[in-house]
Image (cartoon, rainbow, N blue to C red):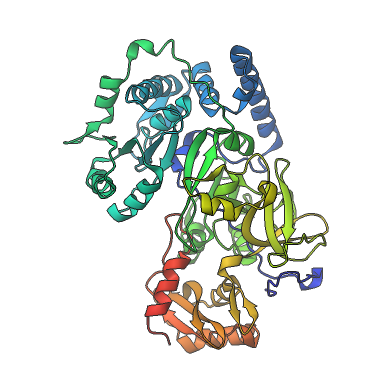
Length: 532
């Protein structure tokens, strides 16, 4: 891959051979299972039917309320959708076989909304949901959308110290979790001297379980007359979404109702799946993908970390009837940034109508208007998140004048306005003023048949800057030496990109909860472990 130097021009004959895209995966599996999901290039008829359905739905809601902005009020949109077809089977729990109709979800979510109100929750308060996927987690989420309360969805594996950092920011009024997480949640709250109601989805000994909570605070008699609260969807927080935290500590992006309503059209979920390339690579190398029937998916989207051309082509061979594409998106954008339109396989796609785009030299801050010249991607539009929650400094640093959002990612575009991801700025290493892409080194090392996974980080050197270190996971039943890895890099890349920091063999690469390489933890490892 060509060095991602800012302002460097790419010719079509010398384009990088491995261009990548990424997407900040949201820790909201329950959200994606039953409500608004990203619109991709699904069959046109399907999208048309969804478009006309949503047009009819929003028109009826506005006619009833007389409030034009209600077209972006997620609570009212979901409420009316559930009410329109109450016999429709909305969700099935694959692990238990439990199922639930729109009508049941409507009744329970209304009860939950009333209960939250009776607990004293008001607009822009925050609730936390941390639980495995099951049919109950949808209920408090929908309820929060009805009343203008934000939801912070947390990884259920977080311990007390990690939860303390999350609660320090969100200051939740109510925490919904499984009974086994109560102790951790309470310890975290105690460390902050913060009080919150803890409600367990299953039976609990010391706190309300969910059914008891609804019985005590929810009002059955008010269900038929219930109407969602009225508020401004442009400023009201729907979700607090943790950024990936791959290069530093995660921040909570405040995403409003309008952000989501504009950037995430409604489509059928079962026809596609979104997966990280690291997970898909593991499935391929272990033979699982070849033996697994994925014919139900019309589309598979890869994002969250580097996506190589080789991986895309391997998947196309295994699943010829499935379209496999790479995507780029961010938590802060509330969605993907580009739409795939039968462009080059390496491309992340073309611009979406709700965004404006600039490619900017991060050193001079001047716009790059020529094609095939790399710079930082800046984006502007109504889908851009509101702020980093209770973190004004980080918010100021990430926005340029006139609310242009600085993504921190290096891109270039071609003559046809296909956009190509090159690298995350913070990942770049510098050896004697030469920029080095960890992703480029990883793509070369991953070609070795004995390499299961690899991640590259740098160790500081007073004279040279950064010395690249390869952290390698060896495939079961295979062997490889550090010298073989170094020789592979030497045979494929220029002298300035060699593994001068050495090689470390690991049992596993540190990952975030969304299966992206955890660059900060990786950096800590390479600074302390012995290198070959």
